[in-house]
Every structure is written in structure tokens, then in C-alpha cells.
Amino acid sequence: MFQIYFYTLKIAVFSTLIAAVIGLITSFFTANRKFYGRRLLLSLSAIPLCIPPLIVALGYVGFWGVNGFVNKLFGTNFSFLYSTLGIVIAQGFYNFPLVTGIVTDAWQKLPSEQASAASLLGANRCRVFFTVTLHQLSGAIAAACIPVFLFSFFSFMIVMLFSPPGQSTLEVEIYHSIRSTLDICSGAKLAVMETSTALGIVALYSFIIRKSQSSSAGIDFVVQPEKRLGREIFIFIPIICMILIFFAFPFISVFVSGLASVTKLFASPTFWSAARNSVLTGFCTGFLCTFLAFFYSLFIKLSRRQGNFILQTLPIIPMAISSVVISWGASLIFRKGNVFMLIALQTLLYWPVAYRHVQSGINRLTPETDMAAAILSRGLFDSILRVYIPECMPILLSSFGFCFAMSLGDATIPLVLSIRGFSTLALYTYNLAGAYRFNQACACGGIVALISMIIFFTKRGSR
Image (cartoon, rainbow, N blue to C red):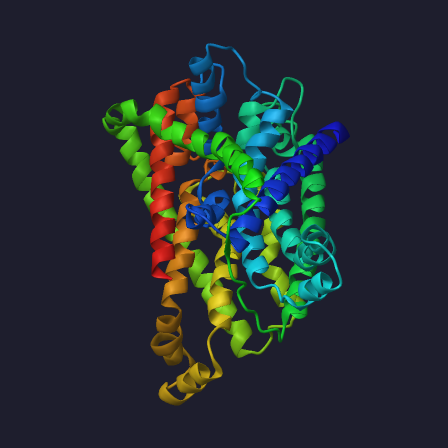
């Protein structure tokens, strides 16, 4: 049991290190340099939230697998996928855009006084970075790495497909104890170990977020001017090549591998049934997450409790509960999975993401808006309908799109609940891959990824 626990920690730590190193180096260029493709790199920051890990696994199989593009191109039989290294690389590069997005935003807003003073005292750029800039960015780096660690710690689909013989993680072992060995006692012990560790990490995350918010209060941020690439190009080119090889090309291979099977996929009634179910659950989950996030954020603002530790911590507690554990717990309580349970569990797990988005929009409302709502409205409900919802509509649509895409890509909860006669696009993709119908799985996975990206970029355009 402890061997499984430490193996899970090892995978999560090394995956986070890869994401942190690649993300930090990339954020240096996206925050401080001008180059073609900069906006595209920044737009990838939602990939870990919107694109399901199953799509990543399919992409790596199509590009790096034994029968993948690389081996066909060079006539070799090489593959690192089905090993710990394969899991770590796949998860690290899958999550690096999240680090890039968060650190870039913080880097662009750094006050320059300390760095300028260090330069005047004779420190070169390298020393300024390690003694001043890195310290200033430490909060943002930690805030980015902790979610990455949790994503890797809770990893299920990638580990299920790539784990070497004799090795497993907590999440996979919990699932096997439910479905295969029926060892409920061992599964419960593993679930307690996993959730206890995650709660500690989430508590640390909450502390870091609160500390970074308090330390930045009252500071007027000025976005630093950007420069063109100089000698850094010798670092920039290898990093971009690594991102292409381990991130972009595997994603592209999903679409290439599935292109020929799209017609066959569309001819299947099961596909259209799964598509309808995905749209239904995605819409309900997105609406409920946004609804809860909006009214919770508005309650905190109107009651002037932004500094309340409990109220600020409550929305991030679901981050400490994995999809497998919460689905298993619900199955034990209610005995039989159904669509309403699926929507409820997805809402419980995803509404913290909606809350983070909606809270930022609610906090940007000026006191004049609150005063206008009080004067022009007959009561609180009227002010919500006439003032607050219209003012927050772009961020509400953004939140809905995020949660819809997350629901669309979720295969884990439907898999664990095992709802009779019910499938979603993500679960259908998993079943196709399990039946060794790889091209059709890529076609279905590509459709899921395409819908998620369309929703995300539409969301960005509306903001």
C-alpha cells in the first residue's frame, strides 16, 4: 500500500517539475519578449482544464507509440510510453501551459524597482533573475504548481493506459478495488490516504493564494515593455522544439489518425446518443456551476466578507477529492448511478473553477455599481436581475463555457458510476480505445477536443 502511495507521489512530483521548468522558461518569453505565436502559446493555458487526459493519451499513442508516427517515419520499434517516464513526460507537458499562463500574468505585473536597484548595484541579468525576480515570482510559481501536482496526483486515464507492469497509483488502485478485486477495505484505506494528502496540499494552496493577494494589495501594476528576441533565441528554439515534439504534434496526431474514421463514426447511432448525453450533462453542469459560483461570490461581496478564511477556503475543498473517490462514495450511498448523480458530482467538483472566474468579475464591480443597484432596484432580487447579472454576463458565459468543456471531457465519473444504457462522448472514446478501435477513438476524441477548443476561444473572444 505504501509502495503505491510513494509511487503516486513520485509521479506527481516529477510531472510537476517538468511542467514547472518548461512553463517557467516559456513564461519568460511570453511575458518579456515579442515573437510570432506568443498569443497562441498563452491561449493554451486552459488545455489542462478543457482537454481531457484521454485525448493526451491517444495523441501520445498515435505519435510516440510502437505503431506511431515516429516509429513509422524512422522504421524503428522504439517507445518510452509504457513506463514511468512516459507517464511523467505526458503529464508534465500536458500541464505546462497552466504554469505558463499564471506565471506570465504575474511576471508582466512585477514592480521593477527592486530589479532596477540590483542592476544599479552591479548585478548582471542572470543574478537579478535568481536573487530578485525568482523571489518575486515564487508565489505565482507555487500557485501554478500546486494545481498541477493535484492533477498529476489524481491522474487516472494516462496512468491506466501507460503504467508499467507491477506499478500503479492510488487512483487506479482505488478503481480496481471497486471494479475488479472488490476489496472495499483496501480501497477505503487508499482513498483516505489520497484525500488526506490532497487536503494538506489544498490547505497550502489556500495559504499561498491568500498571502499573494495580501502582499499585492495596494500595488499599482504596470505591464513591463516587451523586447524582441536576442541571444535568448538559443534557449527559445530548443524549448519550442520540445513543446512541438511532446505537446503539439501528439495533439495533431489525434486529428490525423481519426480523420479517415469520421464517416464511420457518424454512421453509428451510439455516437449520436453519446453526443446528446454529453450536451445535456454539459449544459446542466455548466449552468449549475455558474449559478452556484455567481450567488456565492455575490453573497461574499454584498456581506463584505472577502477576508473570511472559511468562506474563501470552502470553494477549493473539492479540489482535494478525486473523481474516482467521489463517484465511489456516491455509489456506496445511493447504490445505483444515474444521470442526476453524474451532474451533481460534476457540479461539486467543477464549481471551484467557475468560482475563481466569477469571483474575479464580481470583485471588479465598482462601488458605484453597488450604489446604482441599491437606488434603481426595488430589492435585492431585482438588483440581481437588472444590474449584477447584466454586468457580469461576459464572465458568466466564460464560466459556463469552461465547466461545459470540463464536463464534456470527463470520462472518469461516468466510468465509475456505470450508468446502464448511458454513455458520453468521453466515455465512448474510452470504450473505443479499450476495444482497440484506435482510429475511431481518435476521431471521437478529436471531436471532443475540437468542441472544447471552440468553446474556449469563443469564451476568450467574448471577454
